[in-house]
Amino acid sequence: MQVTEQDQYIEVGIGKERYALRINDIHEIIKMQDITEIPNSKPYVKGVINLRGKIVPIISLRNRFDLPEEAYTKSTRIVVVNQADEMVGIVVDRVNQVTSFSDIQPPPERIGSVNGSYFTGIGRTDNGLVSLLKLDQVLHE
Figure 1 (cartoon, rainbow, N blue to C red):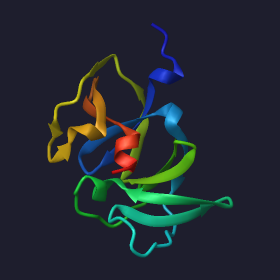
Figure 2: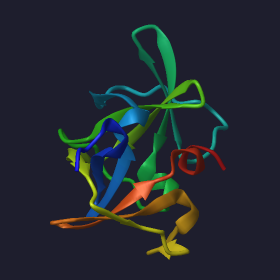
Figure 3: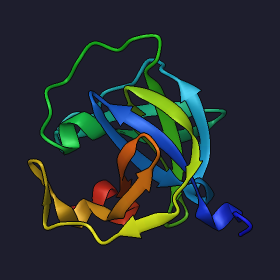
């Protein structure tokens, strides 16, 4: 079976949890940089960065999933995704690898303390299960 780009994902980590984003949705992955805060924004919106002249909003996946914020490390990355003709950056603790899944199951209603509507499914790898993020739900209320 040939794996197409459609079937490939980038696996990212938040704490011990593993999540995946479709490779087609990703614009680029950059190192952590200074984020300019925006007053009165939603709690999960960290602020904005200037990415080669484009203003890109940055959200915290930790905050989105009601996990405590942690200090950024040298592994912290901003995954810049294309969503509805806009670029949005998502802060993750680390980027693990490019992967594909032989088996994807529908998501349960809740995954731990996180609402299942944030996920399109659960992918199975040799190293365990990975939650596939549903970007439009994660990025918007």
